[in-house]
Image (cartoon, rainbow, N blue to C red):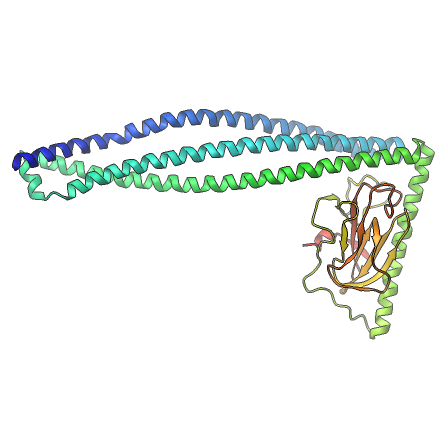
Length: 413
């Protein structure tokens, strides 16, 4: 009986010693696998760095085009200058397409890298769990023996104390590995979150690429329209500019007068202007999309003719237009192939203007509810409602406060 107990204990001590050394073996094996994965990760990092360098080079070229365009915009308006500006914008947009495509490739590499890091951590957790199970089995075996049994099989107190130290080390190792497992699990969760973020970034970049491709097509159509309209004649171009400027000045004057007129009418009918503004603010008149020109945009291609008093929101030709807020129609100008627009007055001194419209569904004095379809977008050069100068299919959207244009993006959600 005593001999068998002693034999079991010797075997147990041997196993303890083996597993005390095991972490070095297990993790050295793990690091062997890790180095293979790590080599691939390092290669991916190198590729990512190369892609980033390419993006930065393109951005430098884009900056130069932007400076050239700004210089030309500051010069006298001429057909040659305008074509140079349009060509510059086209080249800048082509670079943006290249940059976005490289960014997509870079993001794909980053996704692959994060996926490898996740696999690495999952393998590490598996190995640590296997080692923990071995430790727990050893501890369970020891817990099955009484102190008396352990004392009997040891030849001296020193041997007994050595064995107790083994068990103590075993428990310490167990605690240490449990702590490491917890850390790796947390890192794994962070890696998974990072992966989801990268996937969303990839979808946004793909969407952006499609939008930029649509933009460059609009720019090319716009350039061809000007060349066809002017027959590449400087005098014809100057006539076109004069007509466009007169058209915009007339529209602005009509909009200002229309607002004054309808607010006077409301005051006479109701004793005072009781028109209230929507409690929930404005909504987007077309689906929220890319802004192709901002309020008083310094890059607006026709800034030398007039300041841009609104925001241009990309919208396909014929997209339904919705009232940004409830109010009364003050102006609904159908100008044939000239600049057509709709104006609505709201409460709190606010009004909105919808320009380059290809269809008008409302008339002056109509009350429209927020979200009601009031017409359709336009802006394609040479089409109904587009006007003499336009940059492609979009909605020109203005917000005015007490008759003065203000930045629409300060009001849109």
